[in-house]
Amino acid sequence: MSVQYMPVLWNRNKIFYDAVLLIAVGLYLFVFIRVAPAFEDVSKPIDGAILRMRAFGSCAFLMLTIILCIGPLARLDRRFLPLLYNRRHFGVLTAGIAAVHANYVLGWYFNFSPTDKYAALLSSNTSYGQVLGFPFESLGIAALLILFVLAATSHDFWLSFLGAPIWKALHMSIYAAYAFVVLHVAFGALQGPADPIFTGVVAASVVLVCGLHFMTGRMEAARERGEETAKASLQENGWVVAGDLDDIDEDCAKVVTLNEDERVAIFKYDGKLSAITNACAHQNGPLGEGKVLWGCITCPWHGYQYNLADGRAPAPFTEKISTYRLKLIGSTVLLDPNALPPGTHVDPVEIGGAA
Amino acid sequence: MSWRQTKDAPFYVGYLNAVPKPLLVFLSIFAVCFAGGMGLAALALSSTQNDPGSGGFQWGNRFEQAGLLELRPYPVFRVPADGTTPARTYMLSGQGKRGVFGPAKANKETPVNLRGVPVNRGDLTMIQVGKVEATEDGPTGFQPSDPVPLGRWKLSGEICDGKCYAGAMRPGRGLAHKACADLCLTGGIPPVFVSTGPVDGRTFFLMADKNGNLLGDEIKDLLALYIEVEGDVERLDDLMVFKADLATARILK
Image (cartoon, rainbow over all chains, first blue to last red; front, side, top):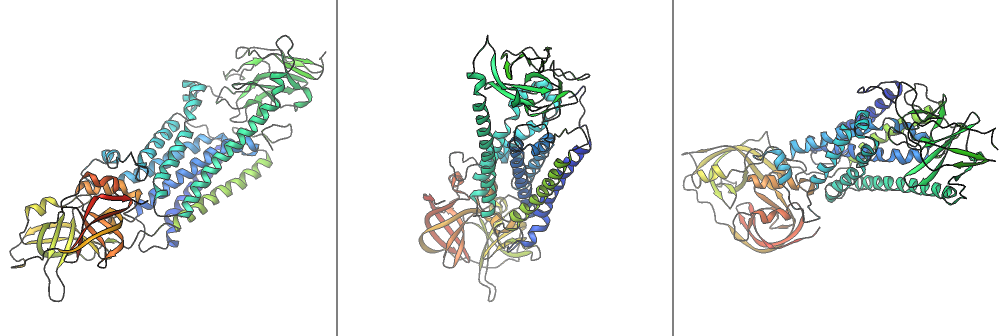
């Protein structure tokens, strides 16, 4: 929720989040570069520049893995939701760590030559026609470019400027970046001398990211099957049966799937019912998984808030979301599937006043 | 806990400093596990890296000798026998990823005094040339020996750039090093075949094409891969030269 854009609005939670992030990354790099070499069994130490590029590269890979796990983890267990809150900080730091990795690669493997290092990067290995020996650097470059674009557009200014659908579509390219990174590693480091630990870490990352997304996909599918009532229910003059009143917890919502792109959150509060779109105006966060706090619907992702009756953020904020009409017959909740324009006032349904 | 919000479930709002206590405990445990896990991952990944070998610059053992420069087909430095020390042939490189074709051509078959820094790995020695000066105090009447043919061999191994593999970079081999090796060879560093099996006790070979000429772009797709290739081997003092017939090359893995 914003009335003006600031680089970062600090509070205690954000400082704690960033501190943990920096400590973990700092610890990783320190152990990798300074501590672990003492335990290596090598004839002569690995070159410092190569050690550092491996440290930063593997760190960026692990960070990207964690970033991609946060989303599904937060769906599977709501206690992970706070990790999602400042995930953009995680992403920006990952792009920075990946850039340091790339800088070491450029400054070591592609330096000390009559050829310009950037020209050398693109022209040294051009064996694009073979799997073994494929110029895996190009896959890393593609991933790095995506990470840069995502980091540069992570601020809410860009979300507002581009609009939520474009911004969201742009930021979904994080999956392409991950795929490029996995291929970068698979065609590069994994083709080198056998290293079971690194191979295991990469395999675990892929299994974890794919597995968690598969699990949440199944969960979503199961939830939507449960909501078939909304689609296949008895129709009464264009209204759909959204479920039973007792399905909804006080101050919480029931999410009704109208079709693949349209979900409605029906909130119960203070003996009343109101329906709004499930997509938050900020980052399309799942409002129906949020809660009514201080009389407002509160998004679980970043705490954006909306008045229940009209879907408008309380002043001075200006975000608006679509509202829906409801009817209550006995304990059955009926929903008009036609969304009203964002910010349209709809009188809440009084539960006690049901016919 | 599930996707479904309930009345009693703790709800986190990031811009408020007050974090529900159950979440605070959970997040504190997570923070410790996250940081600790990253540290353990670093220890596991860093301490189990493969041995890059014993190669390296011999900064404390500067090289300065008189001898003859030859192109075989890459620049080599021929040094006569001295007492009990037999004649030697050294591979040469310039500073960084550069060869020494210029000085070698300019001083071809003229006695020179060559100064530089050895890069050494086992019985592979390459001299990073610092200075080449024509000398009149060179070996008089020195006639370098002709190459001794050792027959046709099928060797398995990897084509590396001689300088990085000798120890200028650790590790200086493998696919991660492919682009660097390519750049080194383009700059004039001699390619070296690192065989998994010895010929006459040696596993490092200066490479040439099957006619003994410089290798060209045909080497690029084979660089840094584990390959099998046939060719004639000859010995030049203590240096092995492998005249690889790249038409017979086969990628093994």
